[in-house]
Image (cartoon, rainbow, N blue to C red; front, side):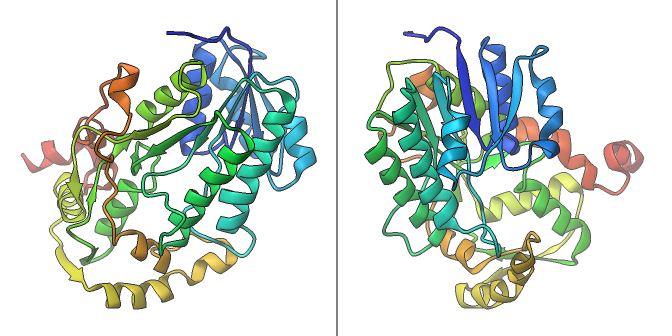
Length: 322
């Protein structure tokens, strides 16, 4: 392994679900970590992810080139984790996935950054009907145009104790008498957040992978129906699972996405329904965990450790039932 000597890494989007784990992984490797976020005051606890003084916060709007240049001052490595799953009044896919990504790549080149890791998503495609996937694809192209040897990482759907994936389904199961099922046969390859973070940290600190693309998926492929059934079983909920045709799902999503206008998390968006038209699995022949000497963690091995929160009786539900 041609490992880079520890220096300074700037992590854009380092306060998010994946970013906090990446910050920890880089700190464990002995790197000084600068976390570039819009609101540092809300991410103060991240300074505790490393030794005293090892992790610092920097205020940065990735759509402001001056902010980005300042965040990269003196950095040896940059990691871009900025991404949104739905649009709100003030945050758009184009600005986050394309324009902001381009700003980071251009500033990284100007600053002489040695390595840039750009985190995209499986399914990124500039020709996709889903705006999320389309802008992810356009973002990859913009980054590669500005920083030729950028490493692109495409994870499948990511799970972990604070995820917005299994937790969302479990919360729905706890509150609703019927579980709607959209695209029940669509396949996914759920991947654990700590595995993704470790892979990113290895790529960021190894100079052999410049210009390459890695797709990260867990050890098992699940259909959406299998995931819903698993969540219901793990949370002890007996619910009717109601398959929804695409037309009906889009109609419901058009109403469900209204809260996003004021910045609230929508239950479902029309764009997410479009995303579910395609599988979200690692492509044949793609580089992945095996090329990094890693074996990913299965979803069942981890999810039961946090889905108990949604059972009647919590973690003692099984004992009570017995």
